[in-house]
Image 1 (cartoon, rainbow, N blue to C red):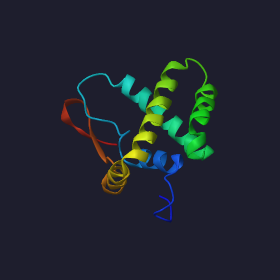
Image 2 (image 1 turned 45 degrees about the horizontal axis):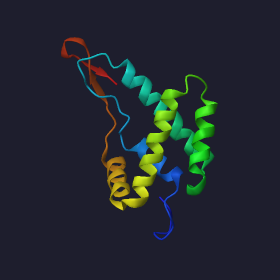
Image 3 (image 1 turned 45 degrees about the vertical axis):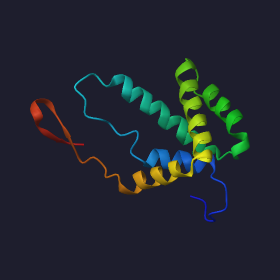
Image 4 (image 1 turned 135 degrees about the vertical axis):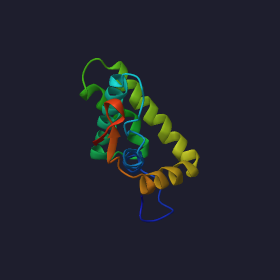
Length: 125
């Protein structure tokens, strides 16, 4: 987060909080998770690019357009992820409680050490 409380949140900080919050962790589901894995991977790529490029808030939208273009085709899924982050950014600016929630999630989320395998066995994760 910004060192001074009066400094505005930067897109880079929100992206880092989202990556650290555990939101992109694998979930235990009985169905095929390939779409989830692919979507989460794409979201990690977009968030990582936002962090690397560290845009000012006012320049976020054009930077997201550049990120989508840099990821290549098909652009639809990347555009959806970028638009979702832009929406999260706007929500975070209007709702400081969201940032507090993400910070809490980032601090309290424990890494998954075990995951269930076939027949309920525990496998190292």
